[in-house]
Image (cartoon, rainbow, N blue to C red):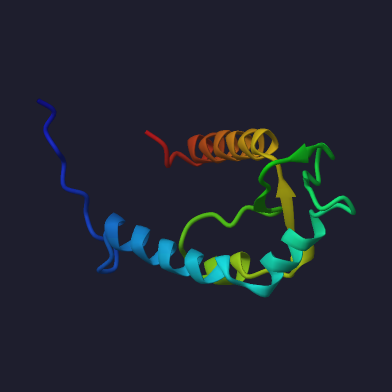
Length: 117
């Protein structure tokens, strides 16, 4: 059985509290006007949703920030609540590809800074 290690709290906030804060703020963003405008922008004349990247019809579009929102810090809310032109509607495949590339880029950046072990 693997031994669990207790993570240190930073500034009184542990990983669990940070996750909960991020989740709560994202729930508010989910109802934002900018997000609703982006969803409308993805609806074609025929009433179906279309991916803004590959232009293919999609059963569901995922609203994605063009600039990565990143970690909860002093600028998190400002990066999250952007105008609708800072958002894009992507199909599942395009969204998964973009997310994978962002995570890889973040990992490489952390390696270069010596933050990744």
